[in-house]
Image (cartoon, rainbow, N blue to C red; front, side, top):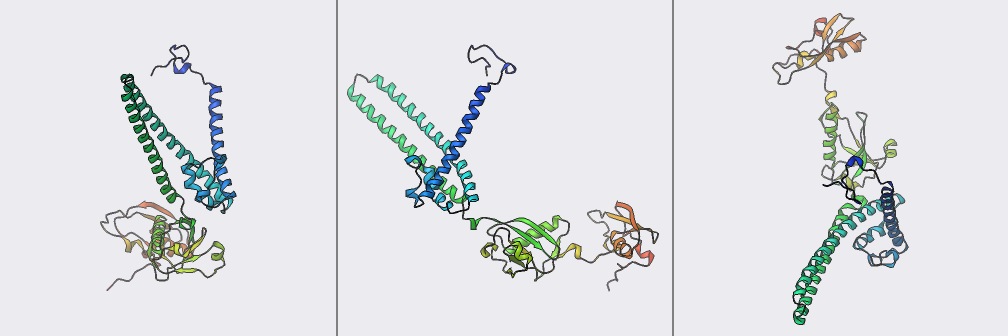
Length: 361
C-alpha cells in the first residue's frame, strides 16, 4: 500500500498523519443521527399498530408508504406487543431495531449485487449494439434480448428478497416464542440440607429426573455428593417464594416423566425437595484405621492432629473431632497432608475411641 497525500500525492508516513477532527465529528454525528432515526422509525411502527391493530393487511404504514418485507413480517408481533407491559415493549423495540438494521444491510447487499449484474449486462449489450448500429432489425432484436435478460435479473432479485423474507419469518418464529414456552428462572431448595440455589434455568422439557441429576452434580461440585435418593425425595412446586415461606399447599411433582413446565411454573417459583436427602457427609464416621486401603491406586492423604489433654499425636480427623473435640479437649494440627503407609491412628491406644468397629464374622 502506498502512503501518500490525497491532495498533492507526496509520500507520507503514518507518524506524520494528523487526525481530522472535523471529519471525525461529522462521522460521529452521522452515526448518531442514523441510530436516532432507526429508533424513531421502530417507535413509529409500534405507534401505528397501537392506533390501528387490526391485521397484517392493515399493518403500520409510516408516512403512508408501502410496507417493507420486514415490516410485514413483524406486524403480527407488533400487534401482540401493544397489549404487553411497557418493559416488554421496550425490549422488543430494541431487538426489532437491531433486527431491522441487519435486514436492511443484507438487503442493500442484494440490491448492490443486482445493480452490478445489471450494469455489466448493459455494458455488454452496448458494446454489441455499436457493432450493429446501422442495422435496425438487429438493433431491435438486440434490445428485445436485453429487455428479456434484464427482466430475468429483476425476477431473480424479487425471488431473492422473497426467500430472504421467508427465512426471516422462520428465524423470527424461533426467536420470539410465546412467553409460556421460554425457560423459567426458579429457585431450588433442599430444606433438609439448608441449601438454596437461586436463578436456576428450568428448560421447557425438564422433568424431576433432570432436576435430581442437576442437583447431584451441584452437590458433587460442593464436595458432598448424594449417596441415594429416597422415595420421599420428591420435588414440590410452590408458585412463589412467599408461598414457600408460608407453606402454602404445593404441587407435588411425583411423575418423573412429566415435564415441570406442564404445571405452569412462574418466574421465581420454588422447587423444594421433600424428605431427608442423604449425602456423603451423612454417612457414619469411620476411623482411618478402618478406611485405609493398602496399595490404593490413589494415595490416601490424611491430616493428623494432636490432643493436648490426652497428650496424644497422630489422631485422624474423624477421631480428633468425635473422640476429642466433642469432649471439650484442646486439639491442634500435628501434620498436614500426610500419606501414611498403614492405617495410622493412635486414638485407640488411649482407650477412649468411639469409632471402634466390631470385626465381621
